[in-house]
Image (tube, rainbow, N blue to C red; front, side, top):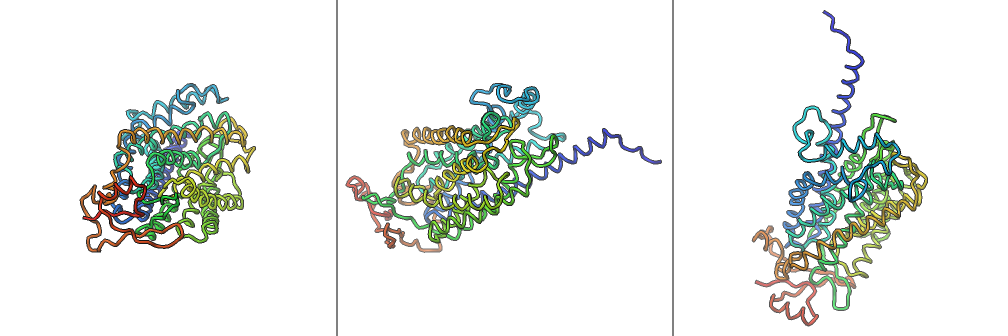
Amino acid sequence: MVAAAPTPQELSDKLSLDSSILAEQFYYYTVVVMWLIHVGFMSYEAGASRRKNVMSTAMKNILTIAVVTPTFYYFGWWIYGCFNTGIIPFTPSKFVNSVHASEVAMANFCSTTYPWAANFGPNLTDHISGVFWAAFLLFSWTTASIMSGALIERVRLSAYLILAVILGSVIWILDASWGWSAYGFLNVRYGFHDSIAGLVVHGVAGAFTLGVLLNLGPRIGKYTRDGLARTFRPHNLHLTLMGLMLIFTGFYGFYAACLVIQSTTLPGWGNIYLNPTTLSAITFAITIGFAGGFTGGYFASRGDPFWTLSGGLAGVISVSAGADIYAPSLDYLIATFGGALAVYAGTAIEKKLRIDDAVGAVAVHGVAGFWSPLAVGLFAAGYPTGLNNVDTSLNGQLYAMMIFLPLGFFGGYIPAWILKKVNLLRVPPEVELEGLDMAEFQADFYPEFERPPEVLIQPDGTLVESAPILLEGYQELMRNGNAPARPVVRS
């Protein structure tokens, strides 16, 4: 008996299901690749820390996942779905021309982003909510990890985790709802364009980190009485550089997860604003962005290994906002400038502003993250963006930057200031001197090796071993303004 031919409706349903399953697989594997970003952050920060703080630094990255995941599930994702037109959610009809379609879409999205929504959980008819939520969740981990490295060796673990929740599950996703959504008011009204979240993720996280660092203060011995900056040598620079390379690998998944699969208007790939693009376009941007960033970082730092690789990261962040529209040659120029800019900014932050950013996160993520949308305003003005096809402009980009800078900075400064006032932000001096590993785990994680003397690099480039000092003597030296360069607790 010959089976009846499928009806057009059955064929359409089958095609729709196949497309949903392919989309599900695509986002699932972007999440898998993005995990390498967090493997990289853990290695990067652990290598940059001193030996006595290695395990506490690594655990901080692991616990980021433990606290940001549930908080993003319970309220972070809802913020993105419902607060896209302002702090108080009101109807998109004020900003979107296609009133009926946009209102229906937003009503549906808000009703399905609550953690108790029917599609959040085992649901055989839903092939997208879980994997798309997870992609955004890993962006949240990234924002917290950006902050994490800057604070190493002196922040309390509990304080860091509170700040990680605020940044990862509130601040960044709030700015994403305003400027990194098809219905965000900065996009549909002002044409703000930040296709791969250069400002939305990196810039805002950098501004948040700066606010925290101003309250946290420098590590003991970082600055001389004359205000000159000393350099703390990483305990394992190779591990730090390997961590950066893992982050770079994960960025390919990060870029891909920033695209959406469109089945209407123009079938194919679209950016977060639903403008058409391709995976090919962003592959050019990310690969050439790394190359340009390495170039700028290398020459600006005169070949310093850490800043050469960090320049690569700054380079790819620099092209993120316009990754879907730049020509490859423009990618290279913008990234090269961004890589060099991060080096100069990092040096100024450390030596002129005397802010102890242990891994240069404010420069690499913050400064390059704000340069990224500015470059779009300078080089891609006139490109139509979003549902209303509003022309991208320098004014629109600057307007978003002026909103996101105080949102990020004060979002970090205020809670850090409160934690500082209640003496919960920073570890006690004796803990910092002895090392966080011994204080938190009562263990030396390198028992087979004799603990070497700590070495610092003086402002003139000479290497000096820090003299051991009793803790009680340290307090007196601090009062006299004559603290040693790198004091160590002697048992």
